[in-house]
Length: 191
Image 1 (tube, helix red, strand yellow):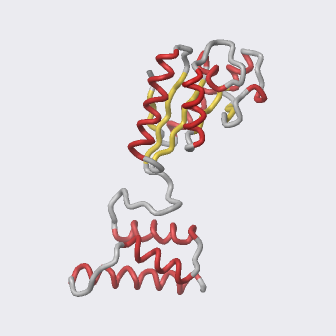
Image 2 (cartoon, one colour; image 1 turned 135 degrees about the vertical axis):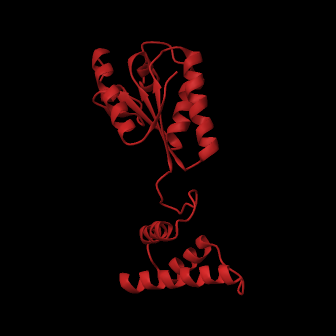
Image 3 (tube, helix red, strand yellow; image 1 turned 90 degrees about the horizontal axis):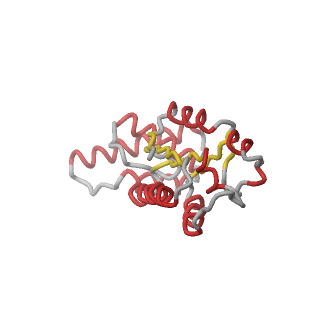
């Protein structure tokens, strides 16, 4: 199926659905249900479906929160972790977990670790890191939370990328990374 006929079918489907809702003569399908049926019937790929959903949201002004598979998250949060205190670690990690609990896959979370906070991301930390914290961080990483490690801090500690836990992302300068993430509309939280 070419893209012109695909887009034409999508527009016709949504117009029919909107007429049905406005006239209350036929039972209406939710947008998601209608889209799912069309995608399944036409064999379109998920990327095309996401583009259709975004185009429909733009055309109709549909409400924020109506997400489709593959849509980017509506929320972005950046946490700073730069201390070696166990209670501090617990507060930051619990807050990250609470955000996942509230927003599920509708949030992109980054924890920027630098200074004394870098120890939570290395295999053999030079400062004590609570085992429970290490397990929680690993679990959060498995749920998609990104943990960024400052390259300058690693160098100062005579560590390399090989000293990092496998899920940690090495960034050249931690504070510059934080600035760039804020420029990409990440909300910033520091304790």
